[in-house]
Length: 125
Image (cartoon, rainbow, N blue to C red):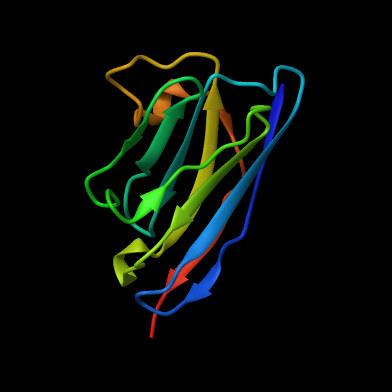
């Protein structure tokens, strides 16, 4: 069982930056596929950034050019560097992981069986 723990959320003004962290632990913690999803109140969970550990990252159009998804080589830490934040980025952010995800569905929430509890990000002036 993989445990995922997010941290780093908070409140920031529009145009600011935040860096979220996701720590993976437990048996099988070294997942090959990890991703960041987000969910605002009244909306469906949506994928923002995903990565296969030995491949290139994928970004949703809504965050492309503003967010990056750094990682460590040990497959136990994933980050979400968020720059030029907008009010519409306000959401609960979740880390997800799995051993394998289809290449054409990096943002399919049903493809990931391990999830963290989430960390809140609020962008407001």
